[in-house]
Length: 150
Image (cartoon, rainbow, N blue to C red; front, side, top):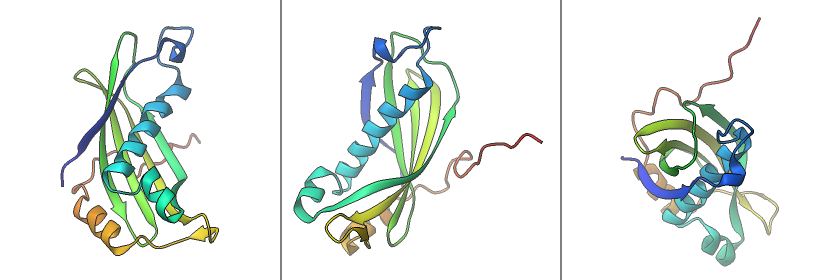
């Protein structure tokens, strides 16, 4: 399947560090906003939560800084479904400023029933939609771990 361009937003001046770059903490904000848009796209956003009490909880993230971001900029996020199983969803995003790739982000999300207070299987229709959207092959940066210094 293809990637999705569901979110873009302007760089905020209060996100800048002392050097005039996007501060590392604020890279996560547009990626998080894009994850919400992706959830909505697949019918597992806030409306889904309000209807049945199930939500997606973040278990793990990995963020790579690829290129600097300076103001003014509009950040465009390209999103993809990288993997899915009974209860988990692996999502990836790439941040663009114009034609420049700036960062990549991936996260593992857990489908969680907040009423039962435990993980829960995705409904079949949700799982099928996610399966049909899987990006193959996955980008080379997916699944990388932080390099260890020895």
